[in-house]
Amino acid sequence: MDIFLQALASAMTPMAIASIGLGALIGLIFGSIPGLTFTVALALALPITFSMDPVPAIGLLLGTYIGGMTGGSVSAILLGIPGTPSAAATVLDGHPMTKQGNASIALGTAVIVSVFGGIFSLIVMIVSVDLVSRVAISFGPAEIFALVLFGLSTICGLCGGSLIKGLISGALGLMIMTVGLDTIDGVQRMTFGSVNMMQGVNLLVAMIGLFAVPFIIEAFAVKTSMPEKSQRISRVKAELPSIGLLGRNLWLMIKCSIMGTGIGAIPGTGGAIASFLAYDHAKRFSKKPETFGKGNIEGVVAPETANNAVTGGTLIPLLSLGIPGDPATAIVLAGLMIHGITPGPALFMNHAGEVYGMYVAVVLAYLWVLGLQLVGIRLFVHVLKIPRELLAVGVLVLCAIGAFSIRNSVFDIYSMGAIGVAAYVLVSFRVPITPIILGMVLGPTLENEFRTAMMLSMGDPEIFYSSPTVLVFFSLALLVIGLQAVSEFKAKKQPKNEVKADA
Image 1 (cartoon, rainbow, N blue to C red):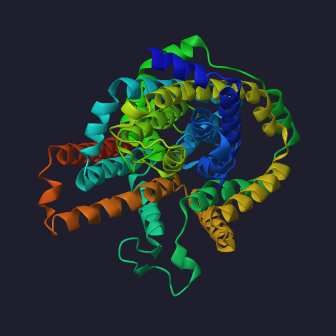
Image 2: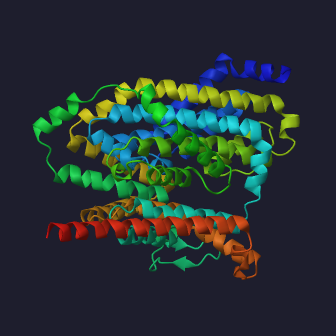
Image 3: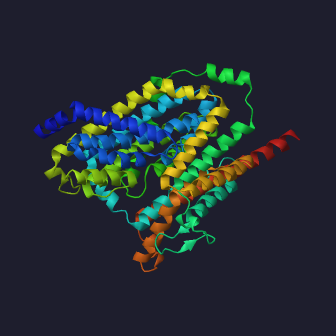
């Protein structure tokens, strides 16, 4: 108890509180700008911590991480352009809510459920860090492959009205992912002799192109009348979700928090997988699944709860085993080690005070994010008052800067434009583009874990059906695909029956 009180005192100093608040603000800004993710913000914030005490330093990094994870929803909801890969699923219902004049309620709901998911995962981490870390570390390449394959099956739930179009879209994402040098053998794939193509297509560049460029093209191609603009502006106001709305979605928030925490605890997964799985779960068990993609608030609650619950989940293997789950937590790990804190089994014996200080810092970071977001809603929604043409120019400039800053490559700007034009054509043919992102997000992990498993088993496929965990995930994937196929068959058969009845 004395150690906890000392940690609480060190985390509640003005320096620590200010550092956490600064990190949350930096994360929110970088997370809300497409291309400038919180990973970039963490890399820039890390040198600032060198001369700081351990608790304020780690608080700054955690605040940046948490603020960035939450900030991705801002541009996803307002512009339909996810600021981070984890917010890609939020676009599906968040942006339609903006078109309906409900931008404020979408933003307010997103931040509140984000805080709920983050605090929930922190509590789970505190009470079960050892147990969850043992389960997570027991996942070998075959188990992770099966989990990711199950995640890939959620394409069926994102395919809109045609399963075939959804699968084609997902296959395109997997194909784009293979461009460049093979990470294991170093073999060139689909580079067509181009040196620039050897670096591959970056996920963030593709994501910006898929979501931002169609928005820009449409802004200049479709003229919005003045009455429509006036009506859209008149609907802009600050609004928060009611207690009743949150109460109706409480069970969904709890389930998605558990899902996000569990997935975050498995190294190599991350917020994007958690958010898409949570979105698919919400749609599959919703009383009104046909409203998803048209502005259903559950489509914002599920992914935002899950991707923020990942933040606590990723800290479980990081603290207990010293294994970072994604690039962002790898930078947090570097910050810990710079200040003489080495994660691992002995962490809680040697640095208990710092660990408890980190727990308090996470809570303070979410309080900062909650305050900044609630105050910022009044400012964020005014983006909708900007004429679409001017907004499109600003988005184009920010996206070009974001795409270039990822790898300092002009080729990435060209890639963004080419992918964006292709996405606009696909949308015009009613081919969903979200499965492309899902294919690109899950593709590298799917391939690497499959090949690693095959190398460990010396080419024996028995490794994929000798584990009960693998069989469970395979069965779930088949079940999801089968249910979607049956649902689509019934949907196509129903109009035919109605025509016969009318005849």
